[in-house]
Length: 370
Image (cartoon, rainbow, N blue to C red; front, side, top):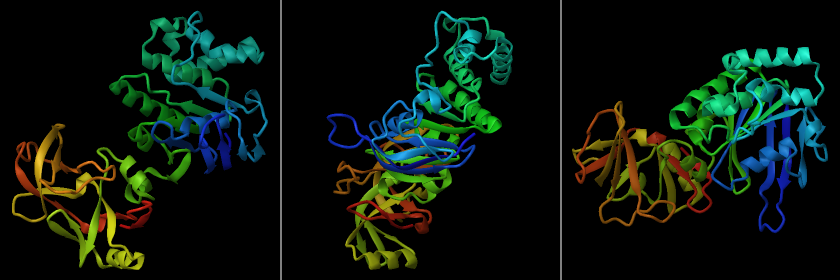
């Protein structure tokens, strides 16, 4: 187990116009499970590879237990890597794959067998120790890759999108197993994924990256309840937060043909910011469909029936209201009832609790209030 500290750590690829990782600061506690998440090209995998010694640290530093890793070869960092593509030897059995790194380290045979047996029991792989990888399912292969890392008893686990090759059901099952296993072992773990649901369900804390820069580093609950900026607000949550830039009016903000009233505290923040418009964010669960005319008018375009709940996608008819990407805005509302509306039906949407409306600066997207 180990503490990890990124101190303004940067990485630049030759010929690139921008840094792949730009002055990243992270402080990771001993035994913590940290997830790096972000869209493609955000720098999350590069940041992980910098920790593992597979990419150069061009500026700043990364410290493991206080020791600067700049210039330290990967093999001397006591880190075990779990890759997306399993990276198993097809001609070796499960047991041989799991024990190969120990063999290269010249660990005595008896000790190797014991560590492999212990890891196989932990992962439910004991019946498969004599099988070749081709005879295993995707989930079993990923567990073998995990076992290969576990037997080394490293200070740090680095996992680079290890579930990307699995089907949806197996992903859910395996991510639960990985999270439970990490808590049982207590090994400091840095995990990379592009899937924000995976990040929210697995990590003790989550670092959200965009274009190589850290946007927010916090607990899953904090990311959901108090996103630091509009990017994090739109990235975290499924379906994502409804975001649009609207004019500020007396008592609140104007959304399409209605005024959404805001609490006095939020109005004070807006007044202090001296803005005419503001970017608002509303989670789908905070919107409800109405047929009494309260709220702003929308037309239902799509209904997703999920059994226990429904998601209603609706657009303001003939309005110029757009999302942050400039495209016509579709509001998403969550309903606990089935078939809450008909396709094409004209209804209104109302905010349950206006105190739950998030406010962001309309230009640079930083959080104002809410």
